[in-house]
Amino acid sequence: MIRVDNELFNNKKSPVIELHDDLFTKKEIRLFVKRDDLIEPAPSGNKWRKLKYNLVQAKQEGYEKLLTFGGAFSNHIYAVAEAGRRFGFQTIGVIRGERIQPLNPTLQHAENCGMHLLFIDRSTYRLKKDKAFQDQLSQRFGKIYLLPEGGTNQLALQGCSEIVAEVRAQLPDMNINYWLTACGTGGTFAGLVQGLESDEKAIGISVLKGDFMAGEVQQLLDISQHKPQAAWEINTTFHHGGYAKHNPALIEFINTFKTKFDIPLDPIYNGKLFYAIWKMIEADQFPKESNILAVHTGGLQGITGFNERFGGVLV
Image (cartoon, rainbow, N blue to C red; front, side):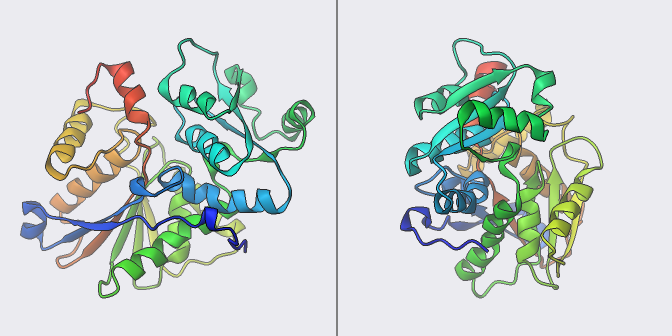
């Protein structure tokens, strides 16, 4: 297990708040939110938690360059670029698709942070896990610390598992029955599962269409040789058409949520998470007197680009 010995990597804990709504009163439910969108001072959300111990290891092993992969609106690309700027790494982002000028806000921020953007076609991008392709990148850029697309690896799980201990310290007298988060690669959720105990349950809300996410999470847990104590499951019914897809019902929910609670939600991950929680509570899928903890994983940087693409539909 990697340990942090540099204060730069020890961030102020993100707050936990309770939301109040007539629905919760009616159903005798309490809902708490871990506001990882407010992590400071590093890149916000689960991307920071995934990066934290990777950055520590890269420092310890003498790496000066980080290389990773992502799409044009990737939260991960944004976070790696920001982390490189803050902690003194050169960064290379291998981007799926061609360069389009002007750059969208995500990629412009990455370049402003000093990230070198390498645009490749989609067929070549599919080779991102191929060792021969990775070797070509090493030959081109020199000694690189390779981060996977989305940032999920075993060190990422270590960082995400810390969410549980933080919440326990912040709510010492509260027994959380259900822990929920959105799932893209499954890394944040798998880390969460690692931190839970046998009387708790984790529910992941998949933002991708299909029934493969549970297998992805199980593979991550198997590789880590961690047998989870808590029960867990993946809900696959709230993807709203698939990854990065949306519909009017989701947009209306996000805007209403923002107006009521003054908490912004991105439409890719957290909008779908909280939409799912509301629908599950309405359908009595949580017993009375349940205490629910939702992890807001950030990703808010993408809202600007989303509004540019879809006509400012998010408030």
